[in-house]
Image (tube, rainbow, N blue to C red; front, side, top):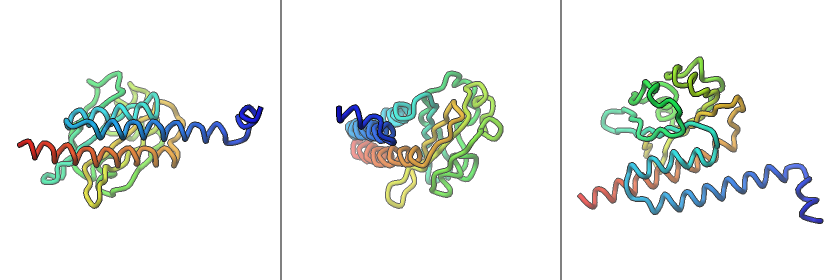
Length: 184
C-alpha cells in the first residue's frame, strides 16, 4: 500500500522519469567507454541522444581546430536525410556554430522558420531544438544537437542531460583520437 500511495504523490512520476533517464545515461556512458573507433563513437552518441529524448533527430558536429570549421559526423533519427543541405559550417555560423563559438548551450523554439535547413526541418516536422558544445577541460571538440518533432519546449533538465552526454562524448572522442594516434 505504501508504494501505491507514493505513486500518487506529486512529483513522484517526474522523479521516477529523471531516475530512468540517469540510468540510461550511465549505461550509455559505460558503453561509449568500451568503444574505440571514432565513427562508432559518433554514431553511438547520436543514438544515445535518441534513446534519451525519444522521437528526435540528433546531429554530432566535430570541430577542426586548424580551419575553425565544423563537420557533420553523425546524423541519426532522420526520415529524409537527403534533404540536409549543410554538412560543414564555420564556427559562429548557425545554431551549432554559435554553440561552439560561445561554448554554451542554446535552446530554440520554432525552428521551421529560422534554421539553416528549413526544408529538412519542415519535412521532418522538427519544431524545437537544443544544442550543446562538446567540452573536455578547456578544449571544445564540436557540438551535439537534438531536434524535437513536438512543440514541447526543451527544459533546463533536458539541457543538463544533453550536456552530460556531450561531456561523456568529448572524453570518448579524445580517447579514440589518442588510441588512433598510438596505433599510427
